[in-house]
Image (cartoon, rainbow, N blue to C red):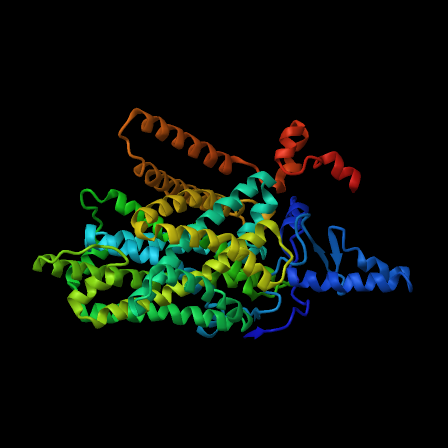
Length: 582
C-alpha cells in the first residue's frame, strides 16, 4: 500500500488542475503539479533540447524549459508558476508512495500516513512548554487542565488546516506566501517566521543543556555548545529516509512520555481533582495571563509551516481520474493522524502538570521552599520522589530537547527554502538554515541563560505576534478557488467558522502582548496605544490584501500607480502585458 522509496519519481502521478471553472487558468498557474516530476521533465527536456538542435526540430519542442509550461512525455501538460523552479520538492529522493483505493477506513493504510503529525506534536512538548506546564502547576494547580485540553483541540483543527493546504496544492505555506503576496511583504513574513524559530531554538537549546547539566554536571554553556554540534546529526538521520526519521522522532517523544508517566504513577496524584480540572471550566483569580499563555504555548507559528511541508513526503496518485479522491482520502487520514498525535501530546503535557501539582502540594505541606522553573524541576522531584527521579526527569528533558532542536532545523529549512526557493543540496540547506536560526539562539542562550524566565516571557510574546501573521494567510489561501481549486475552497459555513477562530486567536494574542507592557507611566500608555494600533493595522492589511492569483481578474494592478505596482512585487504585471504575451 505504501513504500519508502529512495529513488526519484517515475512521473506517473501528475496532478491535473480543473479546467471546468472560470478561474481554471489562474488555478492552473498556482496549483503544484508534483515538483519532482517537473525536475525529471526539465532535465529530460534540457538534454533532449541539446540533442535535438543537431537532429530534428520536432523533438526540440520538448525543451522549452524557460516557459511557463512543460510538456511531459505522456502528453499531459504541467503548469508552473513564475516563481517556481524544479527544486521545490524536498522529498524527491525520500518519500512514501500512497496508492489510491476506494475502500473503507483502514488501520493498515493509516500507518502509511503516520509521521507528520507526530513530528509536529513535539513542538507542543519542547522545553519551553515543559516550563510552562511547571509554572501552570504552581500557579493554578489542576484547575486549568481543561484549558490545556481546549488549546490542544484548537491546535488539532489549525494543524489539520495546515496539512490540508499542503495535501491539496502540493506546496507548503511558505511557498504560497512567496507566490501570492508582494515580495516586500513576503520578506517581512520570512523575517517573522525566522524570529519565531530562533525564539523556539533558544528554549530548546537551553533546555537540552539543562538536561545535560543535571545528568553530567557540566556547565550550561558547555551543554549549549554540545547541543549545537550534535544537532547536525540530523543530516545523517535524514539520509536514512522518511520513515526512519519519523521513527527516531517518535522514539524520542515516547521517551519523554514514559519518563513522566512513570513519575505520575510513582507520585500518585489526586485523580478526582485531575479529572475535575480536565472537564470543569474555571479560571482562578489572578491567572488570566497564565491562561492566555497556555493557548499561546500550544499554537506555534513555525508548526504551521512545518506541517504543511511534511505532508509532501506522501506522494499521492494525482492523475486526473484519481486526483480528487486521492486528496480527500489523504486529508481524512491526516486528520486522524494529527488528532491522535496531538492527543498524545496533551496526555504528556497533562502528566507534567499533574506530577508537579502533587510535588508542589507535598513541598508546601512540609514547609519546604522551592522554585517553579525548568532548571529547578529536578530538585523538586528529588525532594519528593528520591534522588533517582531527577535523572528520569533529565532523560525525558534531554530526549525532547534533542527532538525539538532537530525539528527546528527542519522548520528553518522549509521556511528558508519556501520563501527564497534556494537551489542547494540538503546538507547545504541545513547548514544555511541552521546558521540563520541557531547561531543567534546560541548567542542569546550563552549571555542570558540565567534569566530564562524573563526570556521565555519575551519569546512567548514574539510567538503570539508571529502566529497572527501566519494563521491569516493559512486560512485565507484556502478560501480562494484559484489556489486550492473550486472543489476544495471553503464554503460559507467554513469561512464563518475560520473567521471566528482567527478573530479569537488574534484577540488572545493581542491580550498577551498588552499584558506584558507595564502601565506605570503616561509614556507606557502611549506606547501601548501605538503597539495596538500598529498590530491592528498590519493584521488588517494581511487579512484584506488580495492574493496575486486574482490581481488580473480584478484589474487591480492596472488601476494602481507605479509605486503600488512595485510594492506588489511585479511592476510590469498587467492585463495588457498578459494579452500581448499571449
